[in-house]
Length: 176
Image 1: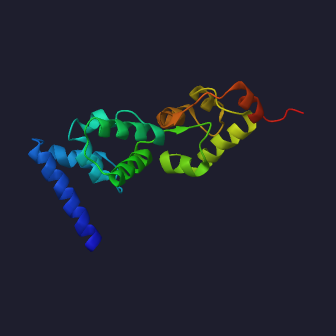
Image 2 (image 1 turned 90 degrees about the vertical axis):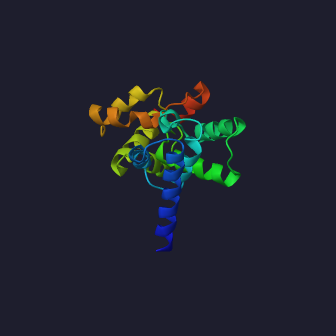
Image 3 (image 1 turned 180 degrees about the vertical axis):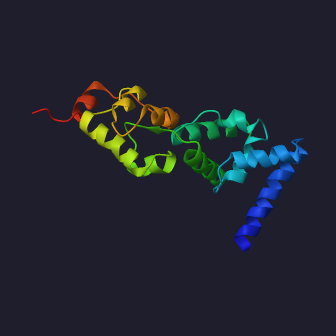
């Protein structure tokens, strides 16, 4: 009961903050539901809308490093948040608005950040293991378990960081 009461208080505080800023109650409610629930949701709502709309903040998916840079930039621009709040915001955004590098991602991270089913995530990692690093997102088409429609749905969750040719050759399976 105590936990749900604190959630109601936090949600109420965020809605009050939005109303004070001139955002109608229905719009404030909609914005809260646009963000997935989780630790950090109300903090993101409170901090981000101080300067701009959520739409501005969350247009792009980023990996954890990208969200760290964004939050650090906001602090440099005058956002008043504690280091603990920054960690919470970064963790929440990474989980709910994250993007993962296909060449470095683990199974656990694939399942945590993307809407992939376990069999799909395993197929992507199996493909990488057998064929080496991904060179582009187009290579997802080579993963047999993924249909073109599914690739279209999920590709926004991924990035591909190029790898050097020496480490790329090391990652290739032995053809002997």
